[in-house]
Length: 466
Picture (spheres, rainbow, N blue to C red):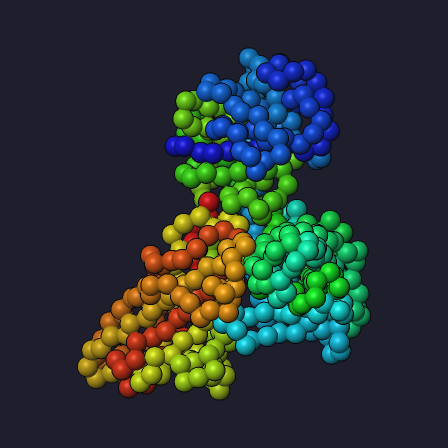
């Protein structure tokens, strides 16, 4: 198993030279640095390379990560490593907007949803949600945005996120209150072309009652006046450390394959990440080709499948007969696909930082026509991804998708109208489908196979974590 592992050290520390004996001070050096198994990485500000045969101890307390050489006594204690990270989608079109000029504007006139922030007025979008019960710290937001003005001179854009939490029995939901502002500034170079997609993170350092199970509100705004055009928010998500899981002992290292990063603080800019929790003791051992992460006890944890749910009512629909129709006339939301016209629903989202492999859609659907003879329905899903610095001419303004993925479902004679079917469609044909990328997927049903509509009542995007 070949595993690329980068361990980011944080906090001040001192001590002897690299490769010395184990001590409480950790590896010498006061600046943050990375430990790599392979050759240097120019994107990292400081790195040290492990050679074949290295054996080091990674140990954490409440504020620091220490990297020590092992002594003959070895490593003690039970190793724990944070889950691959929690990630909560916050749809652009799900923002609550103020009833005045301080409200950002939702624009559905392009193939993807955009939340527009004025260049002259401070404007906001607000999202509310219940914080998941697997939340255990290190929160931040990840944003995908672009500017609709080109630049002849360098400029910067500042994104700001403030937050408020409501605990059980708290009674001030009518008060528009938020805590201290968290911000990240993005430099846009001279020559920036309008619509170039940008991806950034805003760590949530200033928080109020950000506790699992609480009602949480996030308010997002963009600095006014930095550029002449609107700032276009295209995707938003909350990342956090999710619970803990024990790691595997033995020469095989951490269960699962594929490269990943080990960090002390959550960092969604890393394509695959596992966060260390306070009190962790794990060993890193290397040979000529691989690096293994072991605990001193058995247990084991493998990467696991996860999903993002989408509702029929969240679909973005075309302004033509090719749009599926949202029906709220029954107790359950339904997205109706005509039996005579090819119709579509489109969903967009920020692909989570823990995306690894094996993507597919799980559909819950029914037909509103009963069958006296056997028939079939063909579901199709095509997809498109928009990566960092991708121009909108090829993305958010272009209604472009890749090769469709299809799945045919046989319905037996005697099928009764409204009977639920659950099927999965593997996404074998994809375009730029990867972690921290703005993703659009389009769903349609084959026309003409049945006499009635096909009714989509639920769908998940599912994948295997790194």
